[in-house]
Image 1 (cartoon, protein in one colour):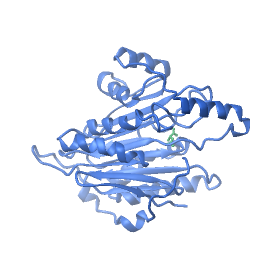
Image 2 (cartoon, rainbow, N blue to C red):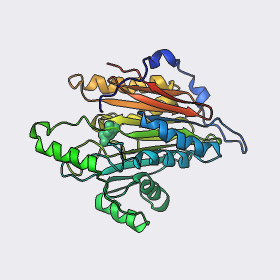
Image 3 (cartoon, rainbow, N blue to C red):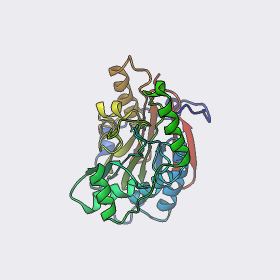
Length: 323
Ligand code: ASP
């Protein structure tokens, strides 16, 4: 995570009720044909505001949550100024941009992902093809590249002048070799008018990572999880820590048990902290959206920003941290 200036101050705990609803309230509901829900989207970081705008455009015209999260995160993937996602993302130690992405349809738990994919600006769209046009869930590396080509995706150089220079500077400075503080993911969860939900997660991972390193983002249950009967969650931060606690799955499972999304996020973060007290820089954050529109968001360390939008409003919130 890059150090970011707070745009505002405030405590999530203060702003959001952490009262657990009874599990009875979360029993799977049959969707009534024609019934409508108020569409809503939550995503990670300040670039989430732009992603949410696109997602809300999709949702406002009756689009699906799946289309909304895909098109929303694509805005960030295609933005060369974002150095931790898609085009313009910082490369691995060998100077190659390797992208990880996953998408999940909460209506039927279908999901798709790619990992270590080089040369394609929108890995989330390749992940969706994996979900919809193969019997598989995750395709990696050269196989993912071949798959993307076979589906007609155009290859492009993902390094920008800025990211190439940053890599050259890092390589020239051996003492920075172990630095992994440059990373962030766009994770998004949405609910559409029909009450269906979806999540997407996409990143270039940790800057200067060992080639082939895969984080949490393309791993369903870790970087994201979504079940329209309950809600969805997405993660950002050090993937190695998120994977150890099956982070996003665990947030959703707490919600399934009736725990409020805010408390669900807090419980999983606390587990991360309890198991790594001697690693204060191992940063993790989650966003969560319950199917009724209740949200949760927090991080282990300070500096996490969360974007929340519905048809009427868009907010960027500074999330509370546990330490
Ligand atoms: N979770 C991402 C990874 O470990 C990085 C991040 O979100 O900061 O690849």
